Every structure is written in structure tokens, then in C-alpha cells.
Image (cartoon, rainbow, N blue to C red; front, side, top):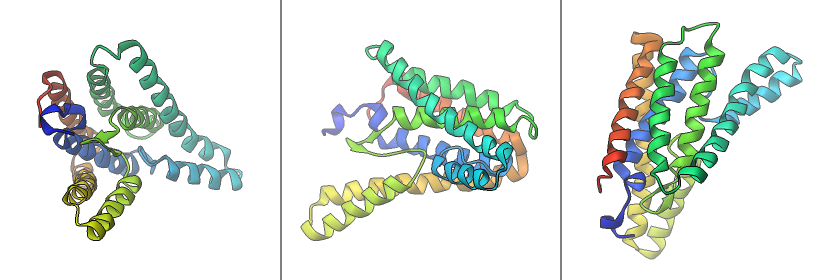
Amino acid sequence: MEEKHLQMSESFFLTAILAIVGGFLDSYSYLMRGHVFANAQTGNIVLFGVNLQKRDFTQAFYYFVPILAFAVGVILVEIIKYFYKEEHWRQRIVALEFVLITVVGFIPLGQYNVVANVLISFVCSMQVETFRRVHGHPFASTMCTGNLRSGTEALCQYFKTGDKTLKQKSLRYYGIITFFIIGAVIGGFLTGRAGGSSIFICSILLAIATILMAKEFRI
């Protein structure tokens, strides 16, 4: 894909912003909202199963709620995509993410954590469903397993073939993972100092992403 034809939604710059948000939200939800994974629903599914085995149905339900919210988020994206596919639907998703994450910042810690986790999981599902390619290659901005596999696979193919495009592909995947880690580090640092309100940094990043999407820069 030629760089000059690259849409903002597939640019590495926007991807880096979203990866930072993804890493931050996972760190935030785990540290501040009752040890729930906002992005990694596999972890929540495992904990859901473990608590079912323990017959702790209250706790099992606590982990089931964000799983359900994640699925509903995907459904909403598909609905928005269907009705607004010719009207920059991705911009609408980012703007909605900004609004919901800002709302989370005003939800008190403690008994309302389940509400916050629902909104965070909802946002993460919309993000991962909306932004699925970087420079033409599949990726995820809210989880790293697939990116790690794809990046390592591309690196191995580069060493076998010497194709520099595979090297670039690999570096992009590892770059996304790096920015996700940066987001998690920032999340761990700020939650220890600003508490629940630390999530407003994600609001700022999503506002920037919304502006970038609106202007459709080519980066």
C-alpha cells in the first residue's frame, strides 16, 4: 500500500495513540477497578470459570459483566458501520470512546466499579473492532498476543528471505506492543498518584485521535 494513500485509521501514528490508551486502560481497570481486565477478556473468562467452579456466583457475575459489555460493543460498532459506512464512521466511534472514558473518570471508586468496568470494556471492544489494520496489516490496539505472533512470524520470514518489507512489518508490530507497554507503565504510575481521575489522560489522547481522524492527516 502506498503511503500517500494511507488512511489515518491505518497510520502508525494513530495506532500508537490507541495502543497507549489500550495499555493504560488495562492497567487502570486492574489496579483501580477491582482487578478486572478491560481488554484481555480471556483473563476475565478464566476468572469467570474459576469462580463458577468455586460456586462463587456473585464474583463470577462480576467477571461476566465486562465480557458481555465487550460483546455488546462489537455489536454496536457493526450497527454504526452499517448505517454510517459512507460518513466517516470511525470518527464517530473515537468520539464516542472519548465521551465514555470521560464519564468513567467521574465514577467513584468502590461500589460503582462494575459500572466503570462495563464502560471501559465497551470502549475497548469498540476500539479493537474499529481499528483492525496498520499499514494494511491486521493488528489489535487493545491486546498484544496476536501482534506478538504476527511480528515474530514476520521477523522469521525476513531472516529467511531478506525481504525488507517483512522487517518493516515486524518492527511495526513490535512498535505497537512497545506503545501498549508504555501505556501500561503510564497507567501504573498515574493511578498511584491521581487515583480514579488518572483516566482523564485517556480522554486527552482520544480527543487528539478524534481531531486527527476529522482532519484525515496522512502520516
